[in-house]
Image 1 (cartoon, helix red, strand yellow):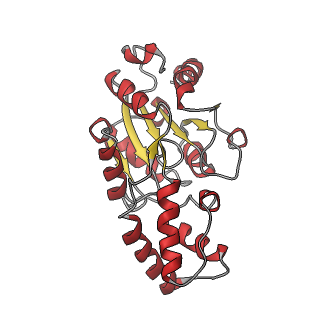
Image 2 (tube, helix red, strand yellow):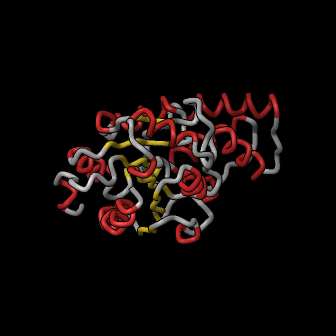
Length: 240
């Protein structure tokens, strides 16, 4: 269960906002992404890849995923060919968004509870914005998320800090009053570049162990986030 203290107000004022990564942090979308990747590869008469292989390809957006998928079966796509394959992937994945995707343990309750407690919630992901909204609607939390910043929203993608800065600007929250929660080097790197506190979650989509990402706290699952926030709060408040 989520810590009951989350249901209370947040008198300390920290964090005023929590930014979450999506894939590998709030949701397990690998089965649907893998299905779309394999449909793409089969369309070019190429061999399929395993779900575990696709798990290691995710990160840095759809185009990078497509590039990695083709490379994994010995085919190098670049330029116009890569762009065309990425467009095909977008169309295919749009049909696979929520067939097998599930929420990570505790994710939906966590967002709902912090939203009720007055903490503003943002989702910052390299997944396209429209796809992200559809997934959040499917899980019934779109209305609890104050801002969604996707890979096609405009700002430079993670690990650059721009997406995080954009989300905080929309919400009117300073970086020192916010927390980034993610599972990958891009998430934690972006938080560091944005001068934000960060929490890394084990079990996400990265070949780098969570405890090697350099986050301020590392947790086994989102169920442990309230305790991590309590541990970070004194230092965050001391920094203003």
